[in-house]
Length: 145
Length: 145
DNA sequence: CCTTGAGTTGAAGTGCACTTTAACTTGCAA
DNA sequence: TTGCAAGTTAAAGTGCACTTCAACTCAAGG
Image (cartoon, rainbow over all chains, first blue to last red; front, side, top):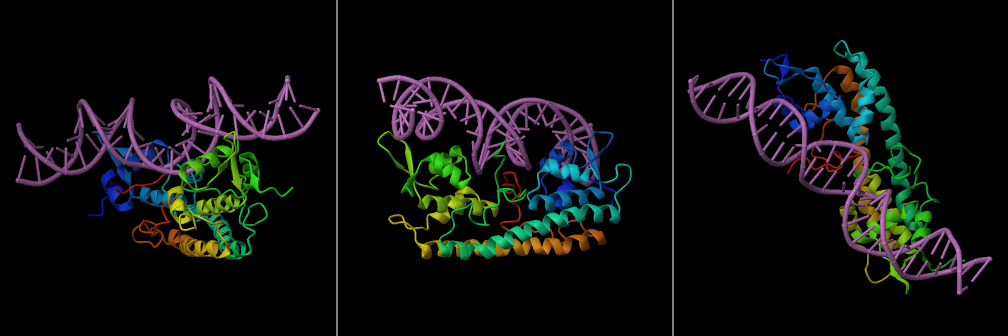
């Protein structure tokens, strides 16, 4: 079989992302699709890698807007190759390192800090409002203007 | 000075959380406040620790609803002591361990996986949809019914 | 040819975590 | 006592990441 292009349903199954989400990603310019004569989307297999990248970045608390910016670094005219993806992954690695670092500090301090009764923010390294990745809970945030 | 109770403004400054957010937390039952004769909130100093706990939990991608459940484990009648907080922090430590683990795997696999071209989800350990904490990006999620 | 599942669109809806607004009241210092 | 910052409420608004809906078209098998 090994077809060149995928329907939106196929891409959804293979990526684990709902068709509606894929359409949404396309609208935001995170992925691209060609069209058939009858106006149906056909995705290049390479888009699978993009979707994968998107979901990984989301695990790091990166917004779709920021992911779009990152993906813009990929070549527009040709299919991205290993070197392209490697370059992109480098920046993600840095983010990952930072995030792991933050969580590790959090873990190491937690018992200690609660045990000693100092858990009152500000004083503690647990509270780190300046960290770009720190405030990314499950809900929208943009607390300080 | 060392006053017994804090106004909402004072708690906001000391916790770094906006007054509107604190009122919201109170509505959801995450924190408690007494009232003055004139109906103004007065927070026990112990509430500071609760707010701290909430913000830390949010960094782990836990929803306010889940945080509320966790906080319900604290004693209702008396001010929580060190042992109470330690017990609570234990469960958070487990979550932290899991999350750090996930991110570490992610980091270790990333370059490798992208480099080898296998980054097509499903096949990769990068994609881990069953992990409770994995899907916690910055936006609301609840993709599968 | 006909049916049926899969795809198309724009517009509206959803859930979370808040913030903003409007209209009003309190608490404290001068 | 008066002035004003800080507090109060309910209700509506915001931003993100989607999903759902209605009304329609397309693609492929029998």
